[in-house]
Length: 337
Image 1 (cartoon, rainbow, N blue to C red):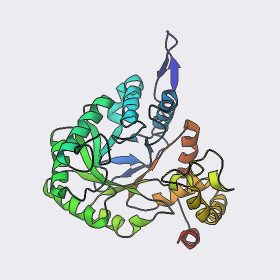
Image 2 (image 1 turned 45 degrees about the horizontal axis):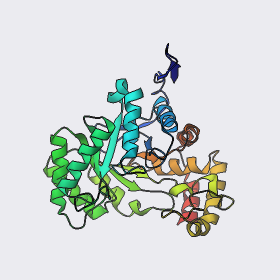
Image 3 (image 1 turned 90 degrees about the horizontal axis):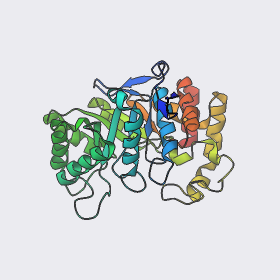
Image 4 (image 1 turned 90 degrees about the vertical axis):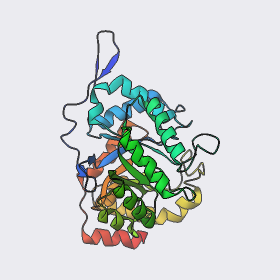
């Protein structure tokens, strides 16, 4: 919600009804409740994008009960720019709402040149979070993730750095991302010994990418850790965008590293069959894809990006129908394998 002050400048006032319709799920065995749908700022929030559009999306999200905003040090482009833009929006609109927000950032992928700007060393993780806090204008984040496993650095060093970050007051909780089940268990053991609140694993999960079902979800449940799913729409394949082929200007048409024409074409029949089931449920394909993930008890939240406030509103309608019949689940399994 926005109003104009006496100078004509648009001032943001959050909707008083923002908590009336959102579903909140407990994250593992922690005290944290996350909105069933969270907002990811991987795309559309860098310096190459419209700051006002990003502001509109974030305002819309909060007005609809989305309290969790997910960033990483290298989101942009360029690297760091999504955090910096988010910091600008926080300062403009959310100074009075900080304690209602659950803020996340990460480090683990390439960020700056040289041997200390990547992977999982203590040097990199602590330096990166210090930079992230400065860009966002925050004293702390609510959760800080190690973004991917580092095959060279001892896991004890990486988890020890996360523990010290919590003890320094720079993060309230810690998480990991892209860890396999065995690595996740090792991390959980170390963090338990260090008495650090490990509450979330962020993993890629969609109807087309079900690797988390091969042991990870079970590992998380056994350790009281929640899962937050990213790329739930398989980079746009599980939407109505590609139902009739590959539109000009789409991600697949640009043959980007994470989506190309061959991938879409090889899944086109599946996409069309899944869309038929979604229509019979009274949903768009994207809404059904989100609901399908949220049926898993271990999943606390689904992480969605958005290019506009309207797109976000449409995807939030997934929460209107979260129930699946056994027949529907069997049909979906028969299509996606």
